[in-house]
Length: 41
Image 1 (tube, rainbow, N blue to C red):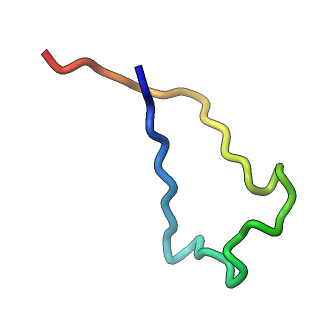
Image 2: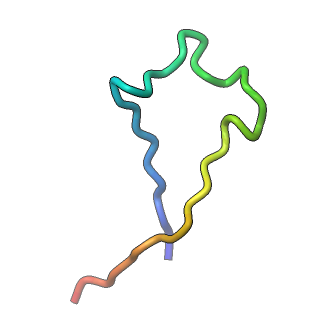
């Protein structure tokens, strides 16, 4: 199974002017507590 994690930005969390790739690895990392998947039948 392949999962595609989506990157989204919102008006309350805009992309920084520099693109956001200048922060630390921790600042640029997203952790997921759980992922729900399903199979189409």
